[in-house]
Length: 139
Image 1 (cartoon, one colour):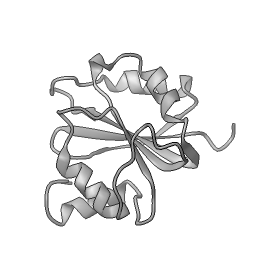
Image 2: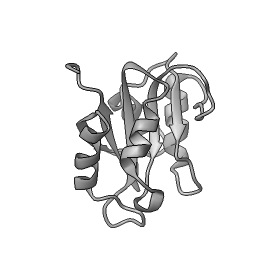
Image 3: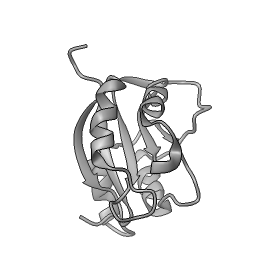
Image 4: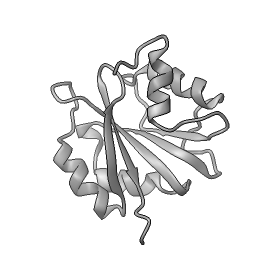
């Protein structure tokens, strides 16, 4: 699976369940994010990503997260603010061995504290891994 330029971009957005008409909120943007992945997602939803000041519900959240970014539980709870019921948070973390990598155990521990379940983890692009988090159906 490779999410670089070209046809592979479509495949990563498909794997993330992103379709035209969806609103995707991006949180945690910084200079190190993967712009090709961002463009692929914008192409898939046929719209720009919205930021934390959007002020309306969103279908999915892309949360870029690095080890030094603070408390992951707080960030996940904050990510739920605008998320529509049944929507997913895609937690994007640097791959193991890359600067800022997050131990997968930290994600596993933080998700249930924030009221979320981890459903899948995929390689999003060359330097980032995407973990899908959702609110459990039986709350």
